[in-house]
Length: 430
Ligand SMILES: Cc1ncc(COP(=O)(O)O)c(C=O)c1O
Image (cartoon, rainbow, N blue to C red; front, side, top):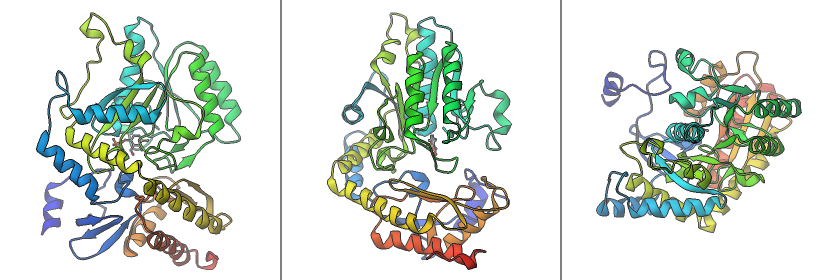
């Protein structure tokens, strides 16, 4: 009955409703487990669209939201402010620990990126400098709003909208084989003086299939950009908050961006919130006697106090040693499993970055989002108690950090079972 109403009234995202099965009716969740109304349970292997970092139903975060609700639930954020937004901004700036000093609030990852792009455009505009080109990486995913789509991979996801995008230059995805040539290409582009910004997902492209690229490439690209007055945006919406083993992925590198975009795990993954943090140099370009030079952008729920309280509580949890011990333990177990997978004949490119474990299934068919293996694997995992959404032929986990050893080993066992039972019978992992 409830699902009938779902079918009747709800339009789900990223879903071909005509052909895809009914959604799971989730009635409750605790830690890394989701429970359905009909008594089944699933391990949340991808942290509910990569957001949930401390597990579901975290009581410390719940209390922070309740306390905040009693004080102030929501308030306009222009001409008014509140303590939790101030606390969050200060703590994020301290944790970023670089030139990123001014925090702008929005509602989700896409809007955090949209804000970053608009900031870069207006930064040059306010100074009367005419530049209009943006550089991004092929395969990028930065969200579903127009600016974010424009700097993302041009493919079936956004084909209907492509005529309406602004022009963007793309570099091929960096690999050992093409890095040098790409850097030479970037140098020529940047030296044209026409580029306002470079935007990248640092070190890992998430939606493209958890693709990793080298620290040295990122460092050299950023150095080149900065040497040529190109503003650098790091989209850390997927990579921040412990995902790669550090609070921010950029900590693996020696470079820092001019703007960073944060969302997903920011609130512990329990409430929507986006942050775009910029340097003082960018902020200062918006200061003027003219109102039109201000950043005239905002959303009704900008700086929502409940979301800010959840984010502050999540930062408290990141200040506890236990959180980092859990992250390390997940990584160690990932690395142990990786050893089993690495030379496996049906797997290409098994890889681990912190809490992320990913592997590409070898397939003769298409490997992208519409890969048939994807549907087969997704269904198999559901039948075996895992909510694990592959990206095409890429199987990956990025679980909540409260995941227990037993739960992680269960995930590995089910992955092994999938390889054995679904066309890979002769290739049992040993
Ligand atoms: C790197 C990256 N940027 C931006 C986004 C968009 O975030 P949201 O879905 O919150 O709009 C995502 C979402 O997956 C992402 O992975």
